[in-house]
Image (tube, rainbow, N blue to C red; front, side, top):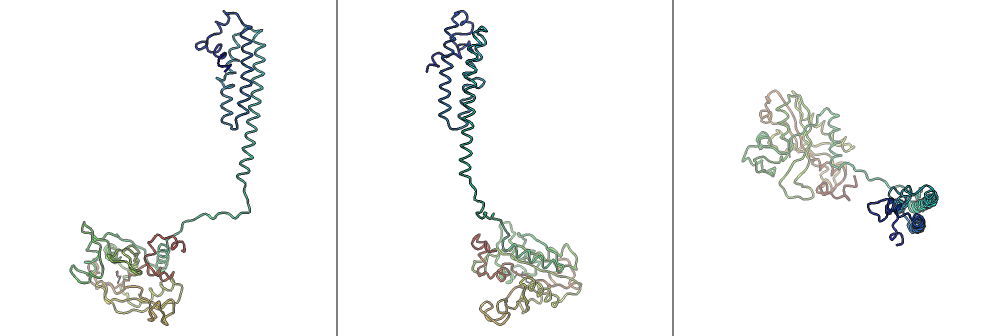
Length: 376
Ligand code: PHE
């Protein structure tokens, strides 16, 4: 309060605000009285600053104290500056005193800063103490979905046997999904594939077979491809049915291609995939785009063909649909059926994954359930 009343820094440093400017001050010619007041002010300030330093416990406040008193516009700095206007003899005396106080306070501030820093250091050392013997936390890494892993494995095996991996559109025309595959409109065979029809006349492909035609239109035989990709079925779901699943189509076309070639390739594939000796079995089936058509089974992975609950006692597991490429399909692809022979197959990728990992519900794959996914 005392300081406020006397307000010396204004008196000298800032004539526009002060009551007594340097000039006024000389005119009044009461140096001695004023110098006494300066001394009192300095002493008051000294005490006050000391108290403030003592009270604070953080560097930010300490810095503010420094600025308030010793900074460029600090109160003590301003007093020092205003002394310039005093006659030399007076100035030296008061100046020395003022500088002493300034230095004294600077040292106090430094000491306090040091103290606070030390305390902080100690505190953080106590808080952030590290026990280097505690085992580290394992970082959580992402990994590939089981279906992706299986898909890549399948691609790898077929590529090693000279097949190219090809893709096709998931939104298809009726032509490629049905007509080109020898399934005309109103043919009862269309009912084999429950279809999602889109408002724009297109549909979600129900199988990967349309890519056979798309590929043969653009590529001349001999050819060997597989086509992994999503297909869609308008069906109720249950442990073995999903409305979206992956299929892998296979197609081989050449001058002379036989069912024996197919058997050899598919057996080799299943053996490499399951890492087990596998026998295949072909039974007659019907697909409009193959003739003859087969249902492909492999010897049961659990009982090796002896018969068990997994294979329902038959010793075989149904794995794929297949057959020799129908002449109509060659024609619709722009190839002369008299010049070419080929076989095609299609299987569900989920089913393969289920066999490999012994999964009993197809819906788990897309459930997003981490308890399931974390196992792969
Ligand atoms: N596209 C058939 C299906 O979805 C499978 C198949 C592919 C059958 C190729 C024969 C030849 O069931």
